[in-house]
Length: 462
Image 1 (cartoon, helix red, strand yellow):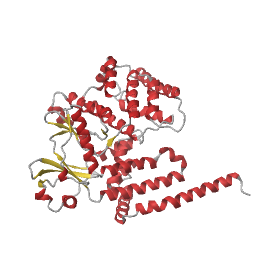
Image 2 (tube, one colour):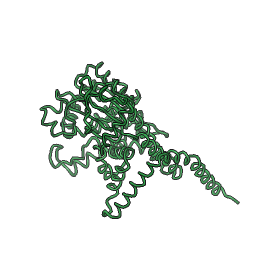
Image 3 (spheres, helix red, strand yellow):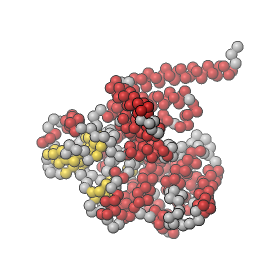
Image 4 (cartoon, one colour):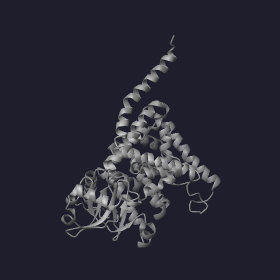
């Protein structure tokens, strides 16, 4: 006689079999459409296994990073996610995958020539371009950028999508997504990680990056915002539609110093604070005044022009913030400035999503305990001022505070939407520039001394 326990086990097994029957064919068909891609994956994994055996058994983060680099575009994107998500992944993996934010190995120009020919026609040289430098200015996981000159004389850059990259991304990401769906059904306790949800979001974002028509429209929208707000301190490149397509984007070449070369930038100006401050203020005002904001302004996408203006480039990843989230973010910033923990907790509830009732008072208490614990630890072990060399560098880092606040909110069942994650990531980018380029503590002190002015600024932005 079957007991209720046996019946439950049978139902669970039946559900697992149904899941596999339903999802596996899709995963297989999507993941194995490209036999060549499977061969590449097997080769990369084989090299990783041999390296582990014969190369002194490198640490798991190093081994994983090298494997991702061998596997190409999709996994480099995942590596960039790891490098940009210290709240989700261990520190040793975050640090190791920082190299994925740098340039990748370029594809030879003869392969990129085929893309140009297919997209712009066989006569693109002579009809559209007068000259193209075959050595790329930049090489990323999805596209490469080349310096060129139009037949009309303008200096431009051409962003060319790597051949076959969309098929590789589609094959890899679909296979990984359906595998994650199956895995979460087989191991229900892992559903709280929402691996399938993360991969679904990556898939959507990456496919958007593959459509240069959308990127061109993003640039037009942001340029219109700059013009309407009278902002002349930040610029975006001009577009050349007749020399562009879904896989080729031709833009004005902005001449300047990328923020990745910080030493040269600091030597080139006496007021770096003013320049980076203009970039930050423009980005912040776009949250309130533009239908989109740049969501990938890492150092490589900020160009300091010769006249001290800042060029925003690469609009492949943008965020569109809802009115609800915008109001919540502004309230959150105000609450953080004056240490109003109930206001911070309520703002997090406005921004995030939850499936259960949240005890706002308890969340506020946990946030207050976190702040007080940090201050007590600093006073007990480091009774010095923040300007003293003995003061621990990580004790006051805003990114650590923000990430810990997000972690605390998530323990209370609050899950933050993609738009807030993009905002947080970009804020952390700006904070990393602040550590080297201007005195963030002084800026925060000024705000604390003039809260009325700061509140007026937030009201204006909203």
